Length: 413
Image (cartoon, rainbow, N blue to C red; front, top):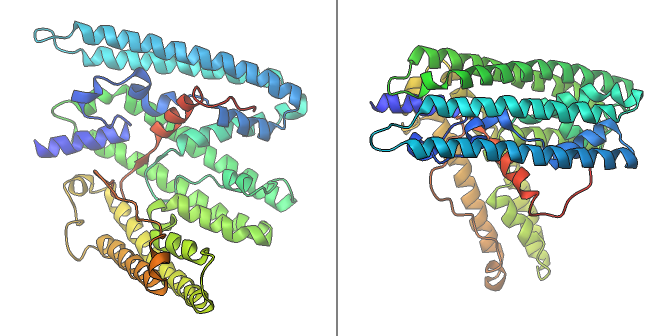
């Protein structure tokens, strides 16, 4: 029974229906639909406007179109929630909750929102000049990456090289070589996004086979293998083209390009650590003595060198663990090697943690008592923390971000 529960958990993880069935009955239809109903948000519209190089008048028209799309999406979601509510109201001790009908409502919502999104994009395309229309495929591909890369199965999959280039304020068409490389990458990455979308839809259509009391292990294994294979393909494409693109970027942008790829690939490893924050804060204090500044500078340099090696080992251990998942998912979900004292991932994680603790302690030693009191506190972790090697789904982030638009001043695309 424990194995069945773990298999069900992993199947629901893949289907982006992570909440247990007892509580998921309270989910809204958007949450039921998971990755297949990601709404187009204002940030997406802004990105598309940039890719298409819209003028002021066109941006105004697109904004009006977006307001209409947003209202229609909300209505679709409200209608779906009403249907789910009516279905739940029928259930009692004598009449069991109809799971198949629940899935049917969610599937119908997905179909309706697909048509709505297509209608919005068709209307957007209608306001474009012929030259802009030639660029529309870029905008469509960017949208597919935005949605598809929120559901990452392996480290390095959730990387959008073109978005990084854009964030670094680099014109992807700035040189002939960079334009050629980015266009090739765009086409290669898009093939995998289309494949992933199809896989997610196939899983969604069969979710009742994954969620029952006796989930089919072979069906889950085959599904996982397909997702991990696609994820590895996306990762390899990202790495292949990162090597091609980086030397084509302005020299001053290359280090930032490489670091952003690492952060997106291994967020737990390469996100700013408490030790880095402590050093940076201490160096910014206005009342440091000359000796303190020298010691902090030396500490920052030594920490950077040691962290580089520790991070590389941690990242490699994550990749090694993920390489075993697709073919041994049952063992991994039952615990695998992670509870063993000599597990490489556990050792690598603890080594970086020890380095951070030593560094923070050294910062405290360098500072005076009154300076030390100002240092930032480490973030306290509460509740379950997902292992680094597990698939990482961020569909809630998109939905929450979309809902916040009602609370914030409207932005112009």
